[in-house]
Length: 138
Image 1 (cartoon, helix red, strand yellow):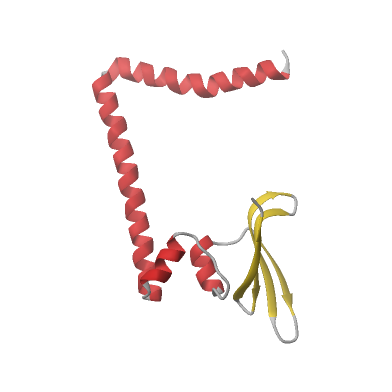
Image 2 (tube, rainbow, N blue to C red; image 1 turned 45 degrees about the vertical axis):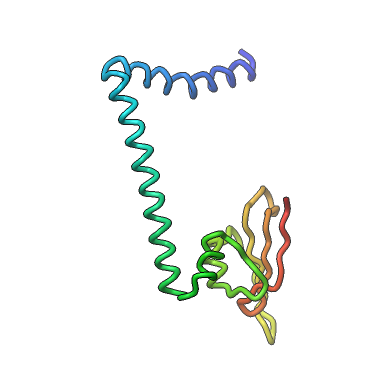
């Protein structure tokens, strides 16, 4: 058996087993009930996601009391002069941080979107906990 054959079998198992399971459940329970369960599951997921987003928005409004700032943070926007705390609220915890402590300032490079090795899709430079620049790969 070649590598291509084993890959094809793996793909068929990943796709085929769930489809086979759905068909068997549909035959056992009835298709209408199965469709209703799937729609209910999707609706529940969407409700949970909206609730989680609202909860995060409310927490940011309580923290910053600035609607424009909260919209920018929710949209994961970053800008020069942004504080490190706002950057954390916007993009989350970086995957890696390079830090240099100099006599008069602290310089950090926050790295996001790890692409392998020491390659990152986004590097944001902070001086004294303020964003001063970034390098973003497309």
